Image (cartoon, rainbow, N blue to C red; front, side):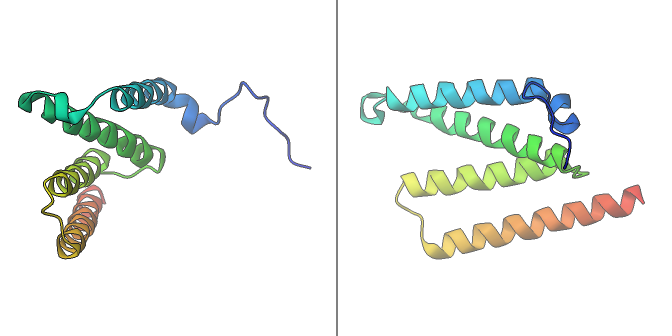
Length: 126
């Protein structure tokens, strides 16, 4: 029978990133509260940018944490590319300018660019 860890012990990978996990949990909690209590129709035009900045930040930090847990060599770049394209899709969707073609093109570009950077980074390190 496998040995069980006590409930307070985290695996080594998660223990190393405990601070980032706590910050992400607080950001997600803040986002839930913010989006539940905010009506976009009542916000001034400049304040409409704030949710997109928040979404980019949370996506970036979440993907960065996942990349670091999976030991991706170019974690910062992968996180940046995926977050930018994710927010771009949200912006286009909110402007009602998003088509299926836009989604397919964005996903293809994101995958291609991410794969290329990981491959180039791996060749330099090796």
